[in-house]
Image 1 (cartoon, rainbow, N blue to C red):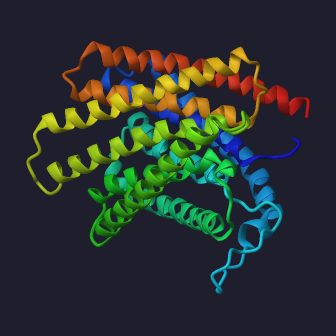
Image 2: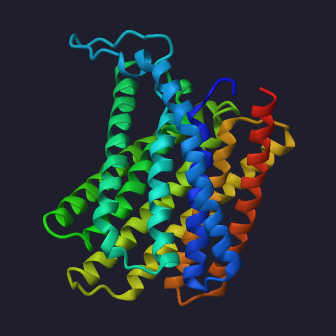
Length: 356
C-alpha cells in the first residue's frame, strides 16, 4: 500500500456523510427506493472503509509513537526539543471523525429501515459514543500538546487543524440528542459532555480560523498536498449550525421552553449563507487544481466533505424556511456533485494504491 497517511480515513468519513445526506434528503421529501439504496450503499461503504483503514492506521500510529507521545513537557520555560518532525497536524483525527460519523449515520438510518424507536437503543448508542469521544479527546489533547510544546513557524502550519473542531462538533450533536432520550443521571452527563465538546471545538475552530487567515495573508495557499484540508472548515460550519438547532429543539421539547419557529429558520439561513460563501472558495480551489494538473494525493478526499455538508444543511434549511424550492435544488445538486466527486477521488485513490 506504500506509505500510509491517516487522511485516507476521509474516505470513510465522506461515505458516512453521503449516507446521512441521502437519509436527510429522504426525510424532507420521500424515501424513494433509489434514495434508500444510496443511503444504505454509502453507509455500508463507510463501515467497510473504516475497518479496512484501521490496521494501517494503527501501524502508522505505532511507527510515530515517539514523535506523537514522546515529546516531553518543558518545565524550565524553554521550547521542547524537536524529535524528528513533531506531529503538529491533525490528520490523525480523521479516524475518530470517521468513527463518530459512522455512529451518527447508523443511528439515523437503522431506525428508519428497521422501524424501531430510537429511544430504545439510546443507552447502547451512548456507550459507543463514549468510546469514540474518549479516542477523540486523547488524540486531540496530544496533538494540541505537541503543537504548543514544539515551536513552528506559521509557514509550517498544517491546515488539517480544522479536523479538530469538526470532530468535536460531530460528537456534540448526538450527545445533545441523546440527553433527551437517556434516563438520569446519564442524560445530564450526555448533555454536559456535548456542551463541553461544542465549547472546546468552537475555541479551537476560532483559533484555526485566525491562523489560516494570517497564513493566507502572508504566504498564500499552502502546498498542494495539504491545501484541500483547509476546506474542512465548511463541514464544521454545518455541524455547529446543526448543534444550535438540536439544542433549541431540546429546550423546546424536553424543557418545554417556547422557541418560535422563526429562530430555527434564521439559524439555518445564517448557516447556509456562510456555507455558500465557503463553497465558492471550494469550487475555485477545485477548478484551479484541475487547470494546473496538481498531482493527486490523499488530501483530495477533503473535497467531498464540503459538498456533503452543503447538501445536509440545504435539506435542513428547506425544512425550516417554508420549504422554499431553492434549498431543495441546492440539496439535490450538491448530492449529485458530491457523489461524482466521491467516485472520481475513489477511482484515483485505487489507481494510486495499485501502482504504489
